Length: 346
Image (cartoon, rainbow, N blue to C red):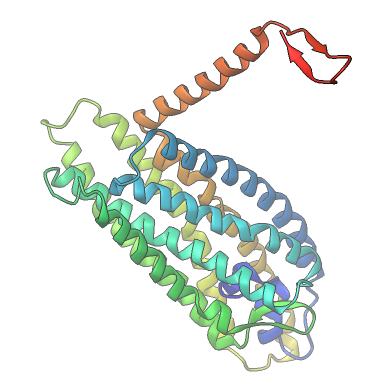
């Protein structure tokens, strides 16, 4: 997106508007690929994310104590992923038709999308740290924190996310050819490096916390269910790094093109354009894996737990019993009074 230059703008804006020499490059195939590929996969991600995250919110509200810090984190993560998801249909439309919705919409959609993106990253870091403390120091007060502390943590997370996303409102605009972008390449670089920084911090926290948890679980005194926990941790690590690793590498490589503003000699133009084209294709593919994380979060952070599985089964059973009651309810005879027109059911 504009605040996340690689994700919010079409390839013509990300690369060509700032970086290609005056002769220009033929990027038609890249745009056509992006319009089709992005639209199809974003549609799938949106459907799965809406279903999974709304289901998490319903289960939390129906069965869980929302004052618990753990549940507060899960609830905020679901809301964060929904905000992130809300921007995806706009970017799918953008890839197909350009930004025709006006500058206010450009700023608002960028702002909401970025709040979801950065709050999700912050929450994953905090949830990993919280899980680390729960395993390494189970008697710590942080593990059982409830009430005002959960509310305070939520306020701080959202305030920080809103603050980080503010440049999306201030420094984005709709430029010629219907591009919703940062006002200049300097802010584009800011958006890229901020994402890289968040990924780097998340990686350090993930590697440190989960490696320590694994070492603890491998001790002979660990619980018998450690094999299942180890599989879950391994899955979380693989999904995180496979999803966000290639994406962050690609946008980091793209940042070099913003730094290189000089013109390209005609004999090197073909090679220059081909390098840009490969990077664009890599961006489209890696971004799908990264953005799919918003629909995978409910699976790995919620429904793998026994408690939430039981809540889900209970809710499905209640829905099933309600439907069966409706089907088994005897047909009622309705008599209409000839004089008053009122209906009486028997």
